[in-house]
Length: 220
Image (cartoon, rainbow, N blue to C red; front, side):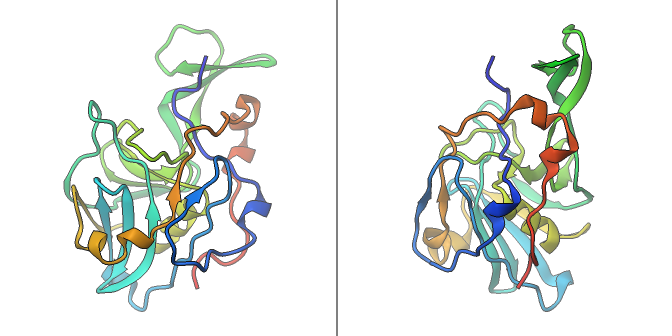
């Protein structure tokens, strides 16, 4: 059985260098996604903008871009909600309450939380969770070139950790089909294609090792 929702798991070595190029590029499946994030001058002025059509996340301080990254948004039948929101709950090591695994001794099988499959339920890791609406949040995971999620906004690898460091409870979030930044910095966002990346080992995903963190400073 394929895993319900595929999450990116990167070892510490993946986070050793920072991306410096401004050229648009596609990351090889399962490869690193290095992004630069800048420390805000005034954290109270940080704003998040999500472009659904471009699948981009822009973290802004006024007209200054603190970080611009690719993301995955909701599929048409389970879309990411549009509108104005605020971040109101952060949880670094969150697990899903709906999708995950059943641990059956030495076996680990994919299962929904409410299924009648036997075994201890362990939710999928959703690292660096930043909730902006009930059951909707930004979190670490695989990123695809087309909408892929059940409404959440996935960020790849270290991008999720840096986003988590940039926002706080109360940070405004604007989600719309397009954003003004699409025309200015949108084309420079490094693209991601994890569509052919293999599923992580489920035995690893039910342990605390699924929440490995990037090394080094998160913000410049």
